[in-house]
Image (cartoon, rainbow, N blue to C red; front, side):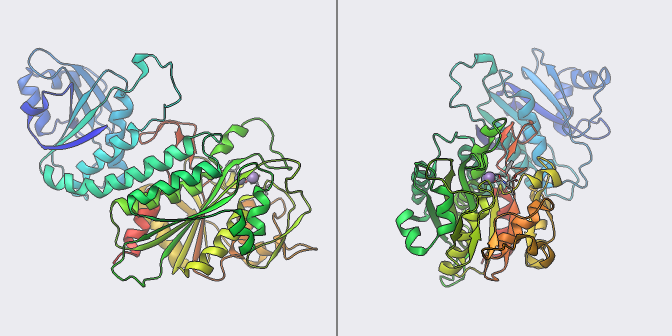
Length: 499
Ligand code: BES
Ligand code: MN
Ligand code: ZN
């Protein structure tokens, strides 16, 4: 989908299949709507009068045009705009696409007149475009028999506003971030026979094209480094386990300590010998969601040339049962030297991150480290699906920064506790720790486990098990991979760590 910005001009908009004009919370047409109403002998105001249209934010009313105006006109409610959030502005654009994506419309002109709002008008216009692109994404490369009338038809969205030049400039870096979101969604959507540790590495290598430095560790190198924890998870798989490292050196200060992003990349989680039940197991292709957020964020940072040094590290393994698979009761030695008793081979994400986190702090001496992982089913019990991710941190300031970036972007996150009492739950009678706690607080004991591998570097863990994949359509994504997290991390970095 192409996005364009143009000065508001009704004559120009008429070239589109459909023209969108806005209506305020009192059902009053904004300036361009009023002009169009006059031009079409009052058909817009008549349509409002003879319907239940209330002008609530995102509510729409479609009018088939007469010979005097555009072919189709959509009235869209703005609701209360005095206090508008970034996500609400995006949902206006996304909602328009969601409702009309397959309706035969090729060109959509969105006429956004200036409003009185806390947000800058050029920003609202740019965010409407962002929402349109977010919602315009679809992963349909494997659908070969879709009937024409079900295929998306929108090719171009033209956002018309009072200062098109500024809106277009504001949109540029946002669009770079969207390219990261698209990559994250593509990676998560691909099935596990296509994206596995070996093919995933090849995709990551292509990011040199974005200006990232890429380094790959294979099993031999990881054995040398003593990564028994990560390697144990992948040992039942035919595919070779890897760690991929992506570097973005955008800061003017070449010696600046990097921000580190670490991701769980379990390309498929069968549970291993502690096999998962069959129903719903196909969903475990998204168990590499944390790593996909890291990869997408690295693309976003590189494409908008962010003035900051960032390291992305992802642990890529496949958790399979086989004659060579890890068993419950096994004891492995991690790169940190700490030993782990495997109680359940399905608690594998923390085993991958244990070595990835230790390696990251050891090798890159980051100023701060954030990991993302579809780590526990328990976080879905706690916070639900599609709502908040779970945030855990040893550092109050860092937790506050991440929470704020979540509120600002709409990729929301909610902090849960870490304390010594929870930490005791993972003590083992035979090794330094075991890989799961008791019945309660499953997400917290998992986070406590990770904390033991952070070596006191300021660190946060974000459990994204409930938010990377959705069973519902919303105004900014279709069901499937949501792209959650890229905008959160991008904002957190730009707000706190850039030159
Ligand atoms: N990948 C799963 C967590 C998960 C579950 C993500 C459902 C998304 C949806 C993780 O590896 C896992 O299996 N965790 C176990 C831990 C338990 C064995 C301590 C869980 O949550 O049941
Ligand atoms: Mn598991
Ligand atoms: Zn898992």
